[in-house]
Image (cartoon, rainbow, N blue to C red; front, side, top):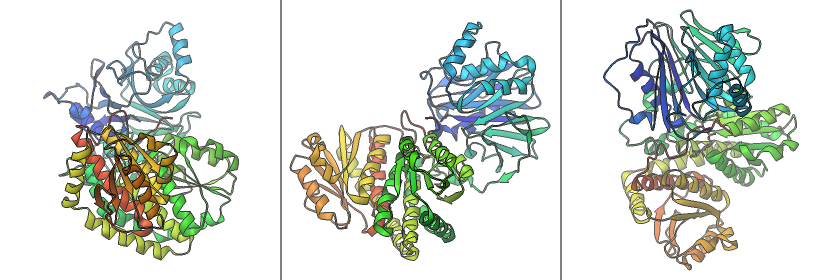
Length: 594
Ligand code: M6R
C-alpha cells in the first residue's frame, strides 16, 4: 500500500506537482503524506497527518535555486508505527544526507534497528523505513549507488523505495515486490517514478517498467536500469500506454464510487466484447489442466466463489477456490500440469502474488484475470485475460467486480462449448443493467438508505451462486458504511446466526428466479417471524418483503445484476453516515503487504 511519486526535471512548481501526483495515488493510502525536495542548501521536508487532498497549497512556488528539480512524495497507509507526523514519509538518515520514501515492509527491520542502535544511531520514528535511510547513509562513503545496493542486500521483504542524496543530482529507485513505474518525457528531459501510472498520466504516457530485483538511477544523462545484485545494466523499452485522463477523473460525479457504479452501463459490454480467442484458449487450458485453482482476495475472492458455482452448473467442472492468504494448504496438490487462475483488480495484491509464486515454483501454468494490465501479476503470468473496466479508483470495487464475473461466466460457457449462449446471456444482462441504472432507481435505493442508516447491524442472505454475492454485499456495506454487516448462506441461518435477529434488524434477501427461490423465501420468512426487516432484491415482489428492490431476471447472470443495487445502497449509507465512500477508514485500494 502507500503511494510513491517522485520527480526529476525542469519543472519548478514542486509543491503543486508532487501534491497533484500524490492525490492520484491516494487510493493506496491516505493517513498521512510528505514531500522532500532538493534545494541549493540541502533537502527540505514537509509532512503532515491527514489526506494530501486536504492540503492547502501555499502561493509560493519554491525556488530551489536548482536547474533540475528533484523531489519525492509519499501518501501513507500505516503498517509499522501509528499515524503520526514522525512516522509519515519521507524519512531522513540521522546525518540528513539521505532521504527516502518506501512502500511495503522490511521483515528483518527489528534486527537491523537493534544493530544500528548499537552503532549509536538514534531513531526518530517507529517505522521500518527509517532503517533503510540509516543503512544507506552508513555506506555512503562507497558512493550513492553502491550504498543503496549494499543497504538493499541487507533488508528482507517486499518493498519499493525512492531515494535522494544531499550531494547528488540523481534519484535512485529500487523494487522488490512492490510496484514502481518510470514515466518519461524525453522532450522535457523529465522523469517521474510512481507506484502507479495515474500519478503522472497528466504529464506523460510513456513508461518504462521496473521489475523485481531491479534498480534505476535517474540523472542528467537519463534513466539507467540495472540488476541490484549483479549490477548488470538492463536495457528498457519505452511503452506508450493508452489510458485516457478523463477515465481516471471524477468528472461531474460527487465520488468515484458512484461514477464507477454508473459506468457498469458500459464496462460490462467491454468485458463481453472480450477477445473470444483468449476465452477459448483459457478454457482449453482448464480442460487440459491437472487441477485448476482459482484465487483472489477480498471481493476478487468472492468473484472466484461465484465462478465455482458457475463452472459446476454450466460446465459440470470442479475448480478449487481459495483466498490468496488461505492458499497454502493447496500447495501440496499443485503439479507442473496444474493451472492457477488469479483474479485481481490491481494485479498487485501481495497475498495473491505469493500464491502465484508458490504455484510457479511448482511449475504450474499461471493465468490471470486483471484490470490493471501493466501490473506485476500481468507480468508474471503466462496468460492474461484483461477485464478492460478502466481505472477503478474508489477503494470499494464495483465495476471491476461485475466485469470479472462476466468474464468468468464466459469462461464457464466456453468450457461447456456454449460460448455464444454465454455471450447472449451477458448481452441481455448488460441491456437490463443499462435500463436499471437510472436516477429513479437510485432514489428508490436512497429512500431505503434513509430508513436504515442508523442500524447497528445488517445481514444478507443468498443461495447457490448468490451466496458469494451475499458475502460480497457484506464487504461493500462494511467498507463504506461501517455498519456491521455479514453475509450468510440462507440455509445456514437457522444453524446459529438467526440468534442475531431482533425487532427491526435489516436483512437483505437475494432471491433469484431460480430453483432455490422458494427455499430462500422460506429463510426470509423465518427471519421475518423473528422481527427482521426484509429487503428483497429480486425480479418479483413478495409479501414477505418489507422493501422491494427490483432487479432484472438475468438467469445465470443474476450475481452480476444482484450486486449492483447493493453497491448503490452501500454508497448512500456511507453518505448518510458522513463517511468518505472513496477513501474508507483503515483501508487502501491495493493491499501490497501481507
Ligand atoms: O486488487 P485486488 O482485486 O487483488 O484486491 C483484492 C481486495 O483487496 C479487494 O477486492 C478489496 O476487498 C476491495 N476493496 C473490495 O471492495
